[in-house]
Amino acid sequence: MAGARKRPRRGVRAVPWHAYARGAIPVVVAAGLAALVRGKVDIADVAMLFLVAIATSAAFLGRGPSVLASVLAVAVFDFFFVPPYLTFDVAEFRHVLTFGVMLCAGILISGLTERIRRQSSEARERERRTAALYALTRALAGARDVKAIAAVASAHVLDVFQVRAALRICDERVSVDAGEAAPGVRVIEMPLLAEGRAVGVLAVRTDETRFADSEQRHLLATFVAQIALALERAQLADEAQRAQLRAQTEEMRSSLLSSVSHDLRTPIGSMLGTATTLLDSGAALSDEQRTELVSSMRDEAARLARLVANLIDMTRVESGALEVKKEWVPLEELVGAVMHRFESRLEGRDIVIDLPPNVLAPIDPVLFEQVLVNLLENAIKHTPAGSPIEIRALESRGEVHVEVADRGPGLPAGAEARIFDKFVRAGSVTDGVGLGLAICKGIVDAHGGKISAGNRAGGGASFRIVLPVEGEPPLAPAEPELERELGGGQA
Image (cartoon, helix red, strand yellow):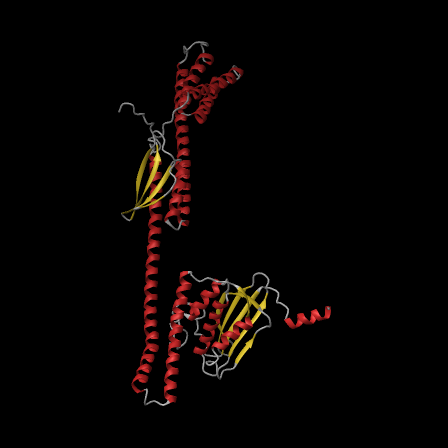
């Protein structure tokens, strides 16, 4: 085609003219040395000097300059060192044989040297390709998503081929800087195929001669195959994660529906039955019976309210809508408020409260009260009536430790970690939807603390909370009586 540039054949490289000029230098040096030893050595030894010159040219300058050095060496040897001197005539036929040997040896040495040089260059090229593929494979192995793979692919294509690239993933375009268009630049789009299906396209901006070499095209194709495998791996991992999420969501939905349908139906059915009894037989009931039915209805309504409140609190925790408003709160007041709420349900139990005086904790009082309420209700629910419950706290090394412990049956073996998961119930108690401890963990985590569970020596379970103490608590104001006394003393 007219105007098209001829592409050089692979393995043939252009030799500059000054390489031919340098090829004559070893011959000139050999001629000088031969002139110095003329008459002292045999003519065959002089021929060896010119063979060394030919080999030197072949080793450092390539085939063309070495062939030229071979011809020049034969001519110089004949003209200056073979009688009759200063002429190209040959008096003896044996010298013609020497010339032929020198010329053939020079051409042979140049060919072998060129082959060795080419093989060395190919070995270095293979090493470079292997290193490039290893670096790409290692980088792709560390890329976990499509954007990371696109960034790795673009960086390595630019580093190895000196061209910019962009990655297109099906209908989703992953933006990678491809640079400004320049004259003579075109885009090569190579499909990324994995297991016979297209997972994307690698677009490379390059000129028409950049990938003229078949080795370069082969290396780019290998890059494309590795990138396609990495994309397939990322897509399969993403699909597996979505499938796992769907399975977990379905399992959670089933657990929620099962728990809610049972735990809401029970109090609602009890309340409906009690209300029906009061309406149908209210006049025939004694005051004691009527009070008992109303109390039962109140208890079931409170139970229903707790179930709904737990569901709402868990929704706030899961959605991230839980706002923690910390303030310095005396633990004594917080525990006292919780004990007052459970006053009727704690009758007949030995309650041990061990709190250091004047301990302040930076907490959200409303949320942390809910934590203590859930832990105390959990202890009441899972322990026999009349068994003791202990609430302890201490301050140590910038942390506040709070513990709620009981003397019940304890936790099942291996349940210490999963007891704080949603919809998990410990023991044989089926009351509740299994959200109380999950809510506790969510609130404690929002405070930057930790909550854990374990069994106690001698029986029972223990729930421990560790909260960080940041900053200094405010100074307590002086009591009015003390201020008056101090003021009176100064008057």
